[in-house]
Image 1 (cartoon, one colour):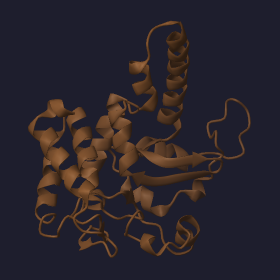
Image 2 (image 1 turned 90 degrees about the vertical axis):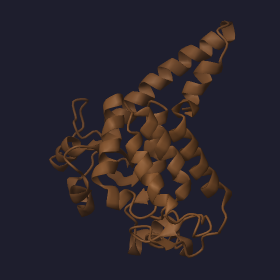
Image 3 (image 1 turned 60 degrees about the vertical axis):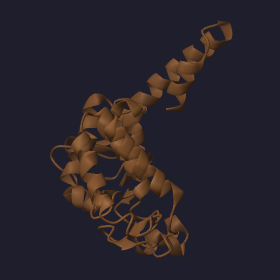
Image 4 (image 1 turned 90 degrees about the horizontal axis):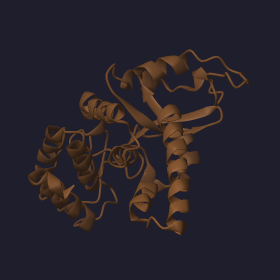
Length: 247
């Protein structure tokens, strides 16, 4: 998104032209890398499941030497036959298969996702509504990490226990990002459904920062009340739905 913004702001003079050429080159390479290696759908998951390891030539299919046994059990049930998303990270021998709301919405808004991938992300949200939206939009990450992995990844941060805060908590501020992505993909009814859900509780609960639990049912254990961004996220979402040109 930063590269695309820079592209639209640079002057087409001698100095700007050189930067523009470098940005276009970088955008092409970055988009190819992300769309190819970070994208996950039913077909791609099945391909990874059948990967062979220790491939070394330029013809290698398993370019990051991912060991299929490292695929977590939850992702097989989570992945619908229609839909997909950008995973959290890819590194040698390891993939972070978690869903991150912020990254996937930004991927749509920045046109990192192709039109087909953008629609697939929306299909996934609809198919996995209970897991990603639940009773309070919107899960920041799914699923939560627990036990030994929680200790390593979060540094035993007591706020980040499972289904709380950044570890699977639900954040009302994300409503505006979901709404923006819905408008761009022509799926405003998804946003309307999420906003209607939030309206049943946000005011009554005094606009908390985040919610806890698998379904986002409980006000977060350390959530501050009357959070500006919880209120602003809701207002921006409403204004965009009322007039999509605000996008």
